[in-house]
Length: 311
Length: 252
Image (cartoon, rainbow over all chains, first blue to last red; front, side):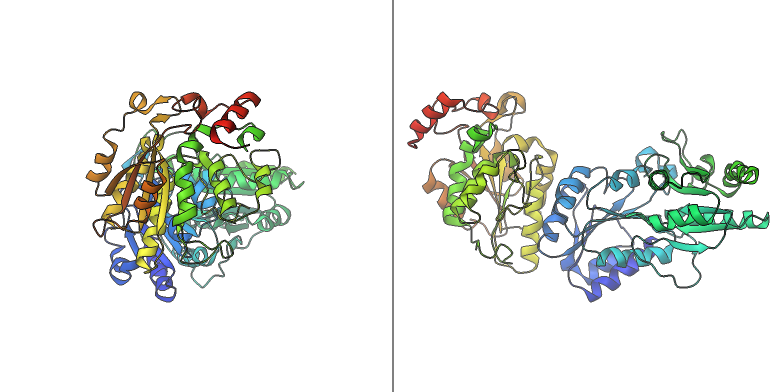
């Protein structure tokens, strides 16, 4: 996703001289092409995310489109008040980009586990929150946030995620992408869990369960139509995210379902426990520890499928 | 305004109101009829709690009518007790949480430099907000990027929220700190309008450096019983105090 982001950024900057790129001293080996090609619109703000976010706002208020870039929690939590008071309150055209969502940097430890960002930024007024599901979505999401007038958060995975979409998709902010059709169960995924969700759906299909998969790349504004359609047209809804179980995709979908009057659909949130990880490891390992791989997902949805049969 | 609204921070306003008067009376290149004029000078009130002074200066400059000052700090009012740009013509940015203004000003100044715009950017900081790390991140940034179109003014009244600066978290030698970060530093009497005007209109003595004006001021300046008292960070004058204060200031 990181490569897709930088490719899209270069294309955007080529066509639009309002595009600025600010980094908090990260991007070694990937940000250099931008730096070389657009030196007057590149800024390494140093290891100073609060200042970087304030500066981004100041630049944006002169009519520019400003990306801020760092990894994990640094461009979000370290400068959260600058995001709220400066970026959001001024409705500044700042696009906050974090590489390393969830356990992308699982072995680096707690400081690098970005596991509450979606919940926190979802609560920020004016903020659009986007977590693309594969490199193609990341490329299109980068363009979409640049064209969107107002604050955006773009949560990326890392480098080298598998492509899920094999043909071109229609990517619109706030509009979920239906990756697979089905009528028994809907898996709603956000961010880089998409591949796992699709694989789980494939495994369920082999067992005879028809599963719809939605890539909910935009957490805010949530595509409530897609959520309600899932509740109406399929018989159970499960959310999957590499994020705390509190306040992210599962929370957003639960809020939508609970107020919709269609609550009777069996519903389950799959995500990370709301606690610090007791161990470190690769992203794959960490996901497995939290039940975010295919077989534990199958186990988790089993009771829902049984309850459907009981009805 | 403050008396009527029963708000606070009158001491903080009086310590910087001479600076605001010179800025809006003599220095800032603005056009109230064109608030979005690309080449206007930018002013950032980083000590947003002194907004009563800014709102009044904006009225004097013709940005909005005086009757709107009645909206300050009251139910349903839009003139918030920390400066807001929402619905208040002439306010460049909102603030209220300390340590935000100088980074914002740096961004505006950097864009101005990179886009070859002629405007200048002024930020007014309190001494208390020099406790904030983000202020020093920006202090490090501006000289590195040669933001000579940026002027930081520190309202150094030597009193912060809960006591004297030297007792809470000493800043001295304040001017030397900014100079060592690479700023062109001037120390002035922040109540001497001639000195203020001279410092704000001067070009940097050395090209390529931002300017830091350490304005030595007195909290509550102009009203004998308010001067240099931490109490007037918070207290609203009562009717008797209001009469005395207006008499001392030569107002009716």
